[in-house]
Length: 373
Image 1: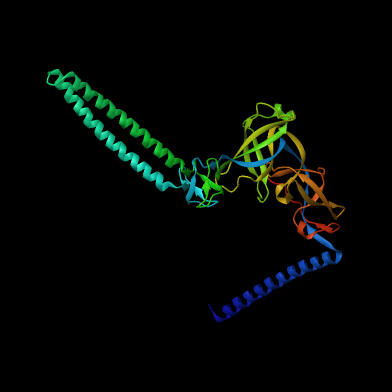
Image 2: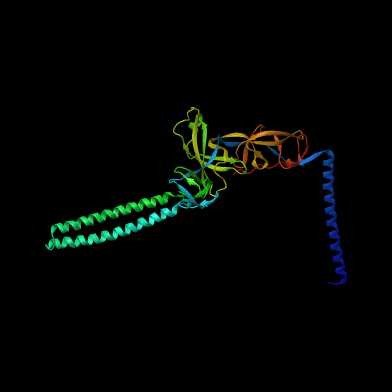
């Protein structure tokens, strides 16, 4: 490349760079001028979403408390002083794990003594059996008297009875040892611990509460009038305070009779909880999804921030934001049914954090509806 060509190329690149910088500054200036104009006019740029009529499955609302399907209150079976406690509240334990023990040293010695007595009784029974076999053989040869053979047989029978008695004593000693230890009947978490080392427990004294939160249930009372609309296997969704997403449940049981007031029917819903995020005792509020669909006013779930069943939105009324509190239902397919506003109304979507009641709005392109699952 000649020096002249190099100078021409360098100059052309410089011109292009200057042009790009100039265009950027021009567009930036236009944007700033537009924002200044909006600010001077008191307008806030927002996008709007239109309330639409959307089909939703019928629902039956319910409330209840989450409970572990497997839960147990563990109590002492034997009187005694607690010598050791192996768990704290919140610990996860496998099935059969020892949670605490009461004066087990003496009971261990009793088991060892019973085992030794059983071993001795079995040795004596074996010897008595051999003596009896020898006596019966000699009786056939008329080498011993019938009385001597009967005595050998009686001694063998007594030795066998002694073995059974020793086995019973060992079983009783092991039972006392087993009952002195409170063990986990299933794998789960220690929800409450009510004992400390050194405490004296009486039979029936509560010691621990054990729960398995991997499978939870909700017991809810529904109006008796919905009996014809529900059946086991129906799906449900529910919300728990502190969680930003709904959870799933299945209707598994319907009471065989209505409650004593004659107006309510108790049902049971199971909710899988494999990750253990939900805990027994939490309050749940949800709806059972019934058959059939009805059209309701709806908004995309992504633009709603609800607290319980309530949400605040800003209606766009003649270019001005008007605050409105509405009721919202559970999400279905990316939409939530709303009460308090009619289809066709427009609400502030993007930019709602920038407006208050009475703010003048500058509408951009409307928000596209959420895609249906």
